[in-house]
Amino acid sequence: MPELPHAEGANAPSLLRARHAGAHGKVTNIELFFDLVFVYAVTQLSHTLLHDLTLAGALHVLLLFLAVWWVWIFTGWITNWLDPERLAVRLLLLVLMFAGLLLSTALPQAFEGRGIVFACAYTFMQVGRSLFMVWALRHSPPAAQRNFHRITSWLVVSGVLWIAGGFASGDARFACWLVALGIEYLGPALYFYVPGLGRSSTLEWDVEGGHLAERCSLFVIIALGESVVVTGSSFAESPRAAYDWLAFSIAFVGCVAMWWIYFDLAVERGSRSIRESADPGRTARLGYTYLHLLIVAGIVVSAVGDELSLSHPHAMASAAQAAVLLGGPALYLLGNALFKQAVNHTNLPFSHLVGLVLLLLLCWPATMLSVLALAGATTLVLVIVAAWETLSLRVLRRELYGSEPHL
View 1 (cartoon, one colour):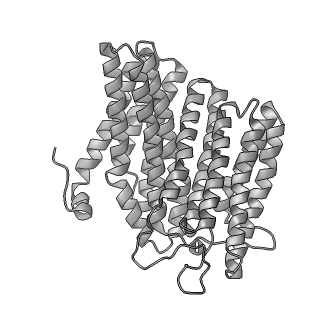
View 2 (cartoon, one colour; view 1 turned 90 degrees about the vertical axis):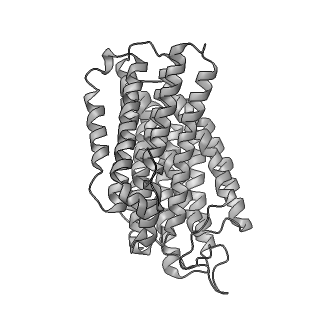
View 3 (cartoon, rainbow, N blue to C red; view 1 turned 135 degrees about the vertical axis):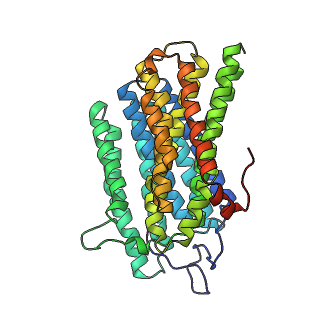
């Protein structure tokens, strides 16, 4: 995430976005097209977790989710600097899209027979994209080039471990991939320090805040879309009894509450904060690179909970099912709370803390309730949080939008 020269003027690198003071870089159609692969990836992750609700299965899906998020967010940073309307950049995104599709198809069996496919596709996307940036910046100042030399060095080291894990099996594969993932997640936190090349600083990570904020909000839409697909598909296959209608309604209301909690005010406040920040790279690293993964993870787990409530509404919730039904909303509220605190420079939202406490209290009777009853309770918590925040921030809403919703 280095400092890059703006693509303005006759001598500017031709592959970089043009930036103009006060302008908001738009998300292009090719970026949205690229994101379609991750609709499939999110679906694969939620279905993989649904079919293996064990501790080992959850750990495997968590590792895969972190990898999927990381490859997407790194691409989001790259397209924040590059101009996707340039032919070379479009071709890059299409090649990455193909590799991402291969990666997504391997997700359900990544810890079985398709580990090497997943590892090679992932490593190709991470290292290949960084090498492209080294080439794209070949006429840029040495400082910009050195930053991507650092990033590429980190990704090459982790890539060796990804591929080694693909050839290994069982616990050895998990261990290799866990270390590789740890290396990649530590990279930005340690400013991609490389002996002899030094390290970056967040002030050098010259991001266009509005564009990156919009990209991340669109990924949240992708994840919410998975919840909608699960709800619609499961209800379409149900006998349409009264409890099916109830489960369908609860799942839909829960999805709407999640949308409201994030999109009602958080998106606009976050976008304004990063656009006006004196150090947008720091905000982008914490708020959008690290904390957004909690928000998306919460939606993915909640989608699994929706499918459980639609397919087994009367069953008493097992410990694993209760963990999913409570864990999804909890991750989502925690991610939103930390994100809002980070970008708005305020205390943790009290409404979100109350929601987390209510979910914690539900842990006690969780396994004594039916799946449908527990799903209804967690949805009620999300609705309470959404309504509370909307009512408590009415003055802020008027400042941002000039109006407020009428109840």
